[in-house]
Amino acid sequence: MKIYIPFILFLLIVLSAFCASAQTLSDAQIKTNAAPVTNSLSYINRLQPVTYQYNRSEYKQLNLPTGTQFGFIANDAKLVVPSAITTHNNWYTAGKGSQRALTTTEVDFQKLVPLLVGAVKEQQAQIEQLRAEIDQLKNSK
Image (cartoon, rainbow, N blue to C red; front, side, top):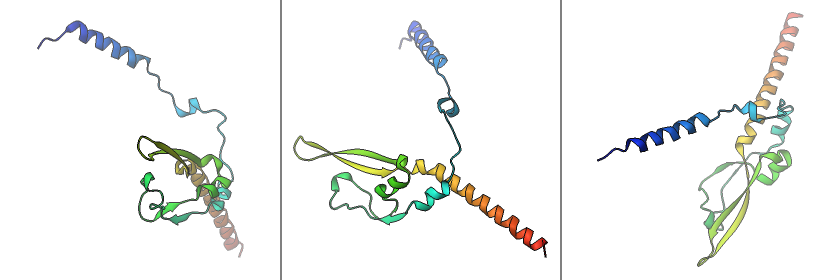
């Protein structure tokens, strides 16, 4: 087995050039107008979590999961947090050589995480305020 030194050198040069041109960016560099999320608790209080089962018999082509699911009804959640709603085109075979698309809306749970963190922080601030008031009442006796 012959090893072609010029080819290996060429490959190393190409790989090193690729690595040298790679750039690492922090998320702060690619985001603008970053501002704290406020009133998170009001958003979370308006969301209505539900349990549900998928209608697998009517929508067999979607290969939906079985069993009880936890989540939100996307149309309801859209009224509260429209940016957390995504749509997906699900393509399926609808006969010989025929494809159809079925568009579904879903809640992107990842987009709700900052609201959840903000709501926990708001509740924690309320708890600390109540603790301070209780301490003040105890000390005033």
